Amino acid sequence: MYIVTAEEMYEIDRYAIEKGGIAGKLLMENAGSQVAHQIKKAYDINQRIAIVVGSGNNGGDGFVIARYLVDYGFDVTLFQLVADEKIKGDAAYHKELWLNQSDKLELVTESNQLKDRLIAYHLVVDAILGIGVSGEIREPIRGMIEVINQLDLTRISVDIPSGLPANDGEDVDIAVKADQTYIIEAPKVSTFCEPTSNYYGNWDIVKIGIPTSAYLDVASRRWRTTSDVQASFPNRGTYAHKGSNGRGVIIGAQPTMPGSVLLSSRAALRSGAGLITVATLKENISIIANGCVEATYHVLPNLIDRLSDKDLKAFDQFDAIAVGMGMGRAKSELLSSLIENLDKPVVIDADGLYHLKTFLDQKAEKRANLIITPHYGEMAMLSNLPVSEIKKAPFEVSKQFAIKHNLYIVLKGKNTIITTPNGTQMVSNQGNPGLAKGGTGDVLSGILLTMIMQHPSILEALANGSYIHGMAADLLIDLKQHTEIDLLATDVIEGLSQVFRTLS
Ligand SMILES: NC(=O)C1=CN([C@@H]2O[C@H](COP(=O)(O)OP(=O)(O)OC[C@H]3O[C@@H](n4cnc5c(N)ncnc54)[C@H](O)[C@@H]3O)[C@@H](O)[C@H]2O)[C@H](O)CC1
Ligand SMILES: [K+]
Image 1: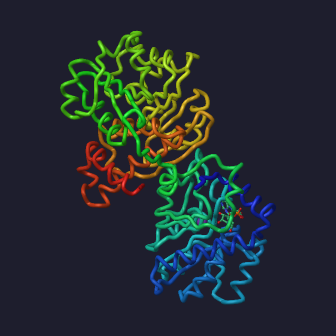
Image 2: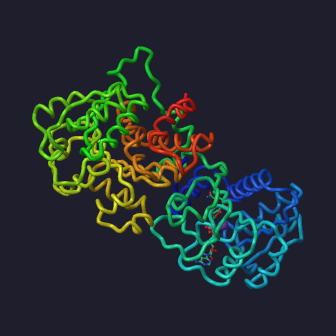
Image 3: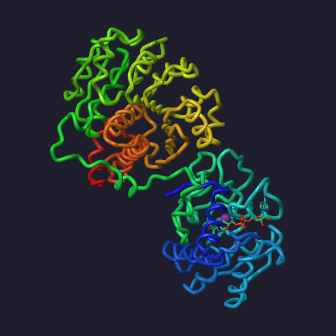
């Protein structure tokens, strides 16, 4: 499923109409009929429904929705919030079709008028503004949105909550706070950004017949659905042996934080790695061995000095490396010596990101595929941007950073955004607030290490790893084995097997 900006959606629309020959009127008919069908499935037939329409094609969708809902037997009244002459093109065509079927169309141009009328309804369908919104919301639409948000109504938005920007990086002036949004064709970028995602409420996609070919040269972001993961998850060969399922090494853990690499190693093994070696200080080994008997060990004298030739030679035997968990932030040359000398995919997490920062801007010879897994605070440290700026434009900030530094980014959050060195992006939105606890990042790094060793594409590996990490947490809650309060990082590791069962 692609994720689009407003500009990309218009381009895709144009392609569908001009190249695909699908008339705009038909796209609007499909949009309205699909949304009406979803409303019919989800809401009680006795709900009195008010459909409020604006001047653009979003309003046009509203006229189509009204026609179908009346046919389904709903009590529907259509409120037009703009003067007749503002209803043009395909929207005007569909307004005529509505008027051929019903006379329930009221012109309302004052917000108080709208307030007096809407109190008699249970549900309002917001077809005022779509992705064509620009700038501060002008009166009288502004007042209408305020009324719709104030009243005790179920709010259903068409395509996008009216007033909300479709793209990231734009401030929200005022927008409908929807309970449910039916998104037309493809989720917008703002569906996945923290300052805007909550306005959508629950959201579902309605497809309206635009061919996938329309997206190919336009959109560079995708939303990872379960079927994408199922289609790309690697099958294990019948004659698999520990070497064929990946041999990984995990480097980290100060004596005060042995649990970090323990979590990463257990997660990597539970995710199907053939062999995991933990490279850490001697005093950590007995503690880690207790919790992960399957791991082997490589003793490091410290986590500060450059790696010795012996260490580098040993690490060169592995398929991929994860480094940084529990490593501490004291000045260290370990990571830079690793990256300068080994051409292996390296997952850099947690304290490792602070070490990376010290040499990131030097044009150090980076032969390895670097994968960084920052949360928003760590991304702020790496990019020298405030967290609020990153939350406002996570796609753009990630893309610029990944291209500039030629690395992969897994920007962890409610919606995890994965970016490749050439700017392609993927979103994984599984997971729940139960994951906001110490150790879950270590678990994710272990999963990603294994995925990277088993997938031909690093992007697919990162997307699938983020998916199974979040899905493990979701299944534990859905199956009532845990609540978001008591869910621990170790539970997520044990929950992985339930996810793998859903993928086979
Ligand atoms: N994606 C598809 O394939 C289809 C989408 N459909 C719907 O079309 C809208 C986009 O339609 P468009 O006419 O381009 O824009 P809007 O409907 O958002 O209306 C813009 C309208 O709003 C007024 N306006 C703009 N900014 C402001 C403001 N700041 N304050 C007040 N008013 C504002 C402006 O006057 C314009 O007239 C899309 O979202 C879908 O819902 C098609 O129906 C089917 C195909
Ligand atoms: K809308």
